Image (cartoon, rainbow, N blue to C red):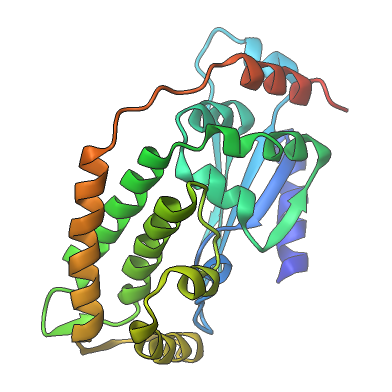
Length: 252
């Protein structure tokens, strides 16, 4: 599959007249709890020729290449990516730290070298808490729940706890977050569920796991209270990102 993905990236570059400067896995495979039948969530950053950015008409800043049962491939223009980095968009920090890299370049390394300077704790906490609350409300409220959704709530909660502890973007791997931030009394229950998730093609419905639900209820409330009490933040300036943008456009 890795070779297939690399062939797709080459095809995108040729047909779209772009340079892909960074490409990673971004979903459950990168988080470390993929099922045997999980698809591949391929995400990339690309650069167009310099003249494209000088047009008066509005231009597209995303490429949506493929979506089927196996592959989900899309990417962001470097201009879009750097604008979102200025806003401390959490997705970019995840793409930067993915443990599964399909392609990267020296141009991306210049972005990676400064990316954490633009990380804002409050923005990260808002993002992960919102993700956790949405999945929790939708899938884990009844007596019978969709078991795999526990990981789509646990991971963002643990990401919040990492941010509160270290003040940095959280790692992608669920195991790393759990080892550092999950209370020891929950680890046996979560480990059993994780093993099931990794081995079962489609982890279906089951009885609610009260000890995990209690943990999620408590932490969602505590993290929400913390965010409310945090001061507003002032974003970094544009100068460094403007220079990065021009340097990347003019790279060979």
